[in-house]
Length: 115
Length: 110
Image 1 (cartoon, one colour):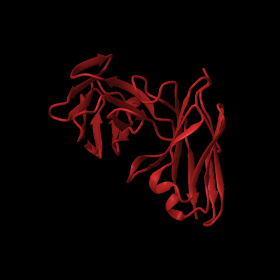
Image 2 (cartoon, chains in turn green, blue):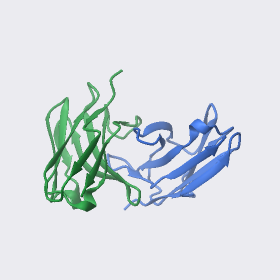
Image 3 (spheres, rainbow over the protein chains, first blue to last red):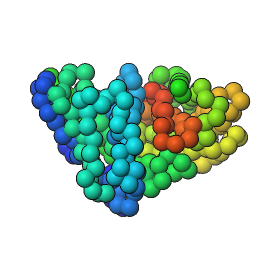
C-alpha cells in the first residue's frame, strides 16, 4: 500500500530563502496534517486540512508558514522567508477520520537545514 | 491547554530486559491515547492505542491507562535491539488537536 510521500527528504536553504515542501497523502484520506519536529519542542501542529479545507492555520506559525491543499492528493508547505530557527524535520500525516479511533499515518519527513 | 510529559528522556536497557515508558497528561477529559515508535530517519508509526481505563496487550507490548491518575504507560517485554527508537506518546482530548510528548529515546544493547 502506498503511504504518505514527502519530498524532498532533505533541504538546505540560506537564511531568507523561500522553500516549498511537498506531501502526497494516502489515497482516500480526508484529513491532512503538517507537523514540525525538533528535539526540544517535539511535534508541533502547523496546519490541518479536512477535505481540502484549512481548519487550523498554525497559530504562532502563521506569519511565515503557509500550507495549501490544491487537490485531495497533494499539499505544500511554504516557508517564507526561512530563518535558522526553522531547522527541523517537517512531517506530513494523513487520516481517513482525523484523530479519533484511527491514528494518522506519517510520512518520513523533510529534514530542513537553514544556514 | 493539554500538557503531556514523558519520562525518562532516554533509556538504555540490555537485550531481554523489560522496559517501561511513562506518559502523564493534564486533561482528564482526554479520550484517545497512542504510543508511536520512530526509528531514526523514519516516519513515526502508531504502535498501540487505548481508549478506556485498563490494560491492553499485543505481543511483547502492553499499555496501561489510568485516567484518574492522568497516566499511561508502555511496557516492552523481552526488549530487542530492533526496539531501539524514539517512543512518542500522543493524547487527544477530542477533535484534531492531539498533543505529543517530547519522546523517550530507547537503546537496547545486544
